[in-house]
Amino acid sequence: MGIHLMKCVTAAMACGALLLAAQCAKKDDKTAAKKPEAEAARPLPVKAPFDIASYFVPSGWMGDQGTSDHKLLGVDALYKGKPRAGSSNGLCIRLSYSGKDWAGVYWQYPDCNWGENLGRMVTGAKKLTFWASGEQGGEVVEFKAGGSGAGFRHPDTFEAPTGPVVLNRDWEPHEINLGDHPDLSNVVGAFACTLHADKTRPGPVVVYLDAIRFE
Image (cartoon, rainbow, N blue to C red):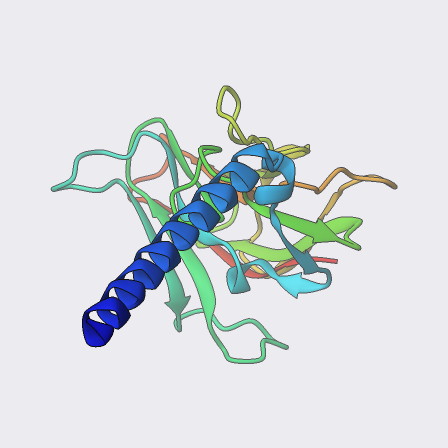
């Protein structure tokens, strides 16, 4: 009888422990349910200055992209053929567009995010700087910081476009002023480059970029 009684007590204690664990789990679930979304999920912070390639990916395709079998806009983020004087690694970004209208790409966080997910919170930045050049000179491009995600849950909290820019063959510095107090609390599309077709010259429109930075 003594042994049987001890087995019963042990079983009861085990059941009690399982019941307590289940109650704790339910309590935690209720606490999590009551936790405001703003506290549960916030953009990850990153402090300027930094190179956008460290956090953002050229994955936001826009405009005339062609088909999956024949892409009209190509991006080579590790191009070696046009090193810029002063570059730390001799590499640059090469964009090539072979369509008849326009195409572009956004550098996004995370990959392929148009505002469905939170981006990064950038602190301490007043401008976005970069270097650019054209293959032949005369290429018409547009640059933009922010401005993506309209209509989605987490759009960019800022937008700073340049309008049309005509490039030279030589490397030249460019700057996008973000203002004195820019709202960079959610940066989804940090930088975009749009290329326009040149119907007066044969071949693709080729543009080079380097050192794209929040500063």
